[in-house]
Image 1 (spheres, one colour):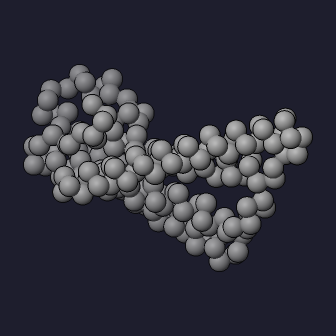
Image 2 (cartoon, one colour; image 1 turned 90 degrees about the vertical axis):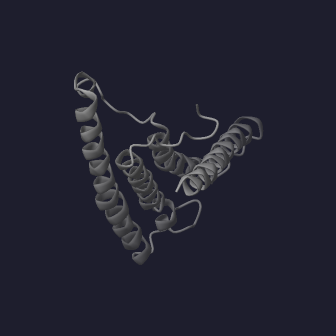
Length: 166
């Protein structure tokens, strides 16, 4: 299981780095084409918006994996270690259920509907369903990481840290 987590972590880091590099290049080109060439590119705004959606959704899954996603532990820190562990398992299971029910199933329905209705993006001329795939994909990643956390909690082992993120 640790090997699989490491592979997914590595792929996700490189994918997010590629998206970040892509959005930087697209926005830089937008500035150059608009202010220096006086001929703004028509696809850069929509492409940067698409990159931002993907970075936000997939980045949320990676943030959940690394433990930097928003979490409030003010109340739970007041409990003893055994109760904190049980509560952590319940909350992690809730996250998995939410990710599957809302993001994977609901997001999958959104993708299917927009694909069926043949909704197209204006400037990129691609199906909006391809852009919306970020929602169920991120849900699958969050569910995967949550299930892995539950496994390690049940085995009373620490969850492996992401390489380079200590």
